[in-house]
Image (tube, rainbow, N blue to C red; front, top):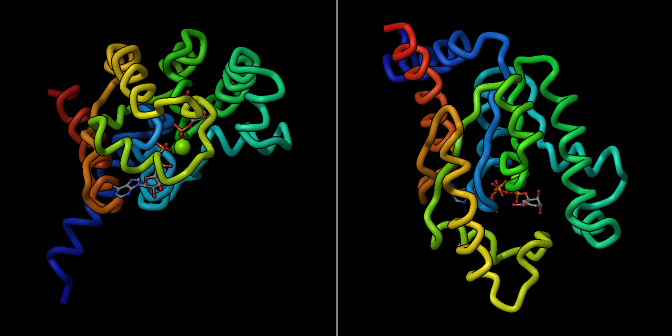
Amino acid sequence: MSDPLLTVANSLKDRARAALGSRNLVLVGLMGAGKSSVGRIVASQLGIPFIDSDHEIERVSRMTIAELFAAYGEEEFRALETRVMKRLLKSGPRVVSTGGGAFINGRTRRHIKKGGLSIWLKADLDVLWERVNKRDTRPLLKTENPKQTLENLMNARYPIYAQADLTVISRDVRKEIMADEVLKAVVEQKESAAS
Ligand SMILES: Nc1ncnc2c1ncn2[C@@H]1O[C@H](COP(=O)(O)OP(=O)(O)O)[C@@H](O)[C@H]1O
Ligand SMILES: O=C(O)C1=C[C@@H](OP(=O)(O)O)[C@@H](O)[C@H](O)C1
Ligand SMILES: [Mg+2]
């Protein structure tokens, strides 16, 4: 006998997959929002490839993000990020998790708008801080007061992330639940576009 709960779960995946079509699903938002970890789950649920743009940048440059910032500075990093994103978005469907600054860069944002459905994982300061303060891999947070830096980035960037096609609130629930909320948002945008 089929399990009714399983049937609902399957149909959410199938409906989200159908709604996405050949587009890329692009996760944007601040450091710690869960783009990399939730994106991986969403891709596996949809049965399509997952790419994290930071990992791709590290693979092609054979350097870590921290090394790239230290050796070439943020401007060069952004130029490389733009090139990598442009290439990743040429074909789909894929789930592409971006680094937090990608959508803020005008050129990269235009590539995202052209090549994908963008989704902002929006979180409040305390949620982000709890997550990012456990690791020191993020060069932009190597400041005297990293929590204040994060808050400044929130103030500067949130109006721009708000231009994403969809928004999902990233909260302290399991990553699998966040992934389901992303899938639901994809389904709902399709249904509201059709009505
Ligand atoms: N929903 C969640 N619940 C608990 N921890 C989470 C959740 N989402 C992400 N994390 C953790 O927060 C940290 C940052 O997540 P990550 O996916 O790297 O974010 P981003 O790519 O947006 O910077 C990681 O350690 C990750 O395991
Ligand atoms: O917000 C940013 O400008 C950055 C976010 C990082 O990615 P995550 O958002 O995945 O941490 C990484 O791309 C780099 O450290 C710069
Ligand atoms: Mg990430």
